[in-house]
Length: 281
Ligand code: FAD
Image (cartoon, rainbow, N blue to C red):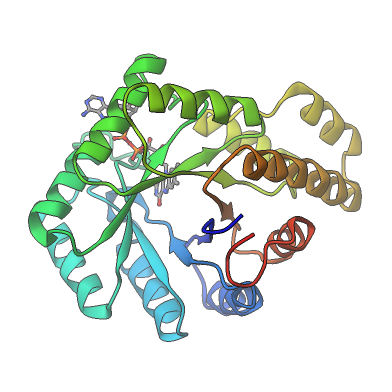
């Protein structure tokens, strides 16, 4: 099978040590030749310059990079300026999001992702390849299942090219979602987001917040391992390898790895799945 897209996601580090570690991480991952590395953006502009600086460093290392972007509480001038700066840097791909406001910024106005896509197209035409977010287990604030995919369609209608999903551990949720999307005329690539399992408590906390379900059997197994991190890593690798295999065999157009700025589990998955270095399987 050819033409699948494999990509990796980072967050902007908060310290000089974190910056150094991240550079080591992308150096380890680059041998696998991912299609791009994306860098998250703290809504409300909280990481605006940090995201920009991280994107710049990755670009200068000779890698393809896709900044995440949202309005947060920012005005149009700030977003236009950022788009301009990314363009000057030679960035060709963006991940456009509504984002979530950090606590304490509740009064700010959130701009839906479809409106941001509209805005980017209005300002920059077809210049950027635009990715948006999709939720096979449905966004936690969605009115209902059908409304959520209706709004996903609005993002594509506004000019988004493809989507990356929230992570999930149930392949059927993804396949059902794709079927429902196709039924309303969405035929764009929707790439599964893959979260390696490395630590139970962090994963549980994060999953509760973003509405991703950890199936009970996985929870119970991880709970039983308690502090035995070697067993968690080994079990997690088996579970996620199996998930990725099912997704690829079932027609998923690629995989987007949430690296949490660490290379090891992603490299192990890459090897288990025998994804080759041209980014294709
Ligand atoms: P939207 O697509 O705007 O949807 C948000 C909610 O509103 C949904 O419930 C939807 O059903 C509803 N909705 C959408 N459009 C409309 C409309 N026009 N009218 C009424 N209701 C509407 N967060 C960050 O802070 N920084 C990041 O870098 C980041 N990266 C992410 C990357 C990926 C691949 C994913 C899957 C998520 C990421 N997130 C990030 C999390 C994301 O910002 C949150 O899930 C956020 O709550 C929703 O963003 P969205 O772009 O999906 O929103």
